[in-house]
Length: 128
Image (cartoon, rainbow, N blue to C red; front, top):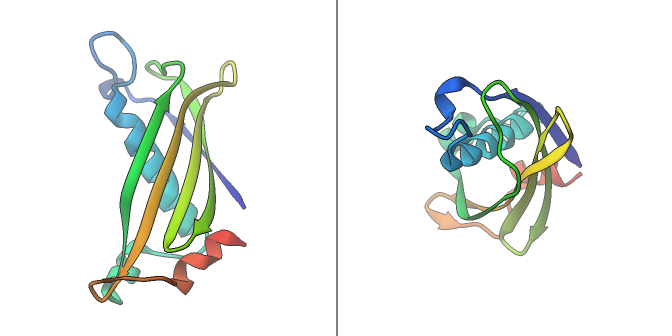
């Protein structure tokens, strides 16, 4: 399953060079993952209330071409499961020319009642 989220660069996300500061790409991918889950009816707040915390174990960002102020972009998210890990592959694509701006691999795990969980049915909806 692939999820797509369209976004736009805000001026305060850019540094003195006029390009998006590298840390903001992580914010973009996080927001897209949250929207992906919400589109399937999964709420982080609800999961937490039930003792399920979904946390990032590792993130790798590969920067390709920069985004600039007011650029519109698309975050494409796909997910697969390997053991206890849910692995998100996320591409940030600049819409004006469809160039890949950033490629991310984000590994998340579920902590249920304080323990690493091998299974998390609430997240398995992402795999359909």
